[in-house]
Amino acid sequence: MSFSLFPFAYALAELSPVLSPWIGGEQGEKVAHQAVSIAQTLTGEKEVVKVMGSLKGDPHLLAKFQESLIKMDQELELAIYRDRDNARMRDIALAHAGRSNLRADIMVVSAACGLISCLLTITLYRSSLPGEAVGIISTVAGIFGSCLKDAYAFKFGSSRGSKLKDGKISALFLSKNG
Image (tube, rainbow, N blue to C red):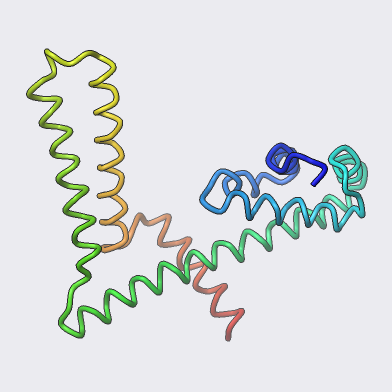
C-alpha cells in the first residue's frame, strides 16, 4: 500500500465520526481497511490527499461515504450482538443440561482474587510502597474491577441505555432476517 493505514482512517473518521470508536477497538485494523477501501472505491482515487479532496469537495459523495460507514457500523454492531447472544444462549443451554461454564467461573474467580490481592497489597503495604507502585497496583485493580463489571453485565444484563440499544439492534436483526 502506498499510504499509512491508520492516519488515513483517522482522517476519514473526521468526515464520519461513526468510524472513530471502531478504529481504536479490537477490530481496528479490519475496520480501517474497510473504511479506506470504501473511500477509495467511491472516489476512484488511491492517494490519501486525492481521496480526502474528493470527499470534501463533493457533498453527494461525502453523503454516500457516510451512509456506507453507517451501514458498516450497523453490520459490526449486529455481529457483536449475535456473538453476545450466542454466548448467553450457550450458558443457558449448559445450565439446562445441568452443567456449568467452568471457564467463565474460573475467569470471574481469578478477577475477584486479583482485585482482592491488589486492594490488600495497597492496604497492608501502602506506607512502604513507592507512589509509582501504588499507582500501578491501583491501575491493575481497576482492570480486575472492570473484568468483574463485564462479567456481571453479561450475566445479569447491563444498563438501561444498553438494553435499549440491544432492543434496537434486535429489531434491526429481526427485520433483516424476517
